Length: 48
Image (cartoon, rainbow, N blue to C red):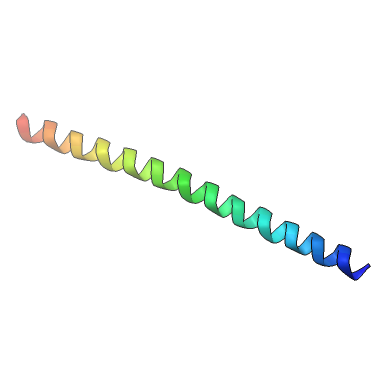
């Protein structure tokens, strides 16, 4: 019974870790896009 409990805890920990990795990747992609769009907008504003 103890082994199945440890396996479940391990599974939950891995699932949480994978969710963290996915969220981090998504955050980085959106952060890069927002930064790029902001820089483009600032360059366009400077041209005007």
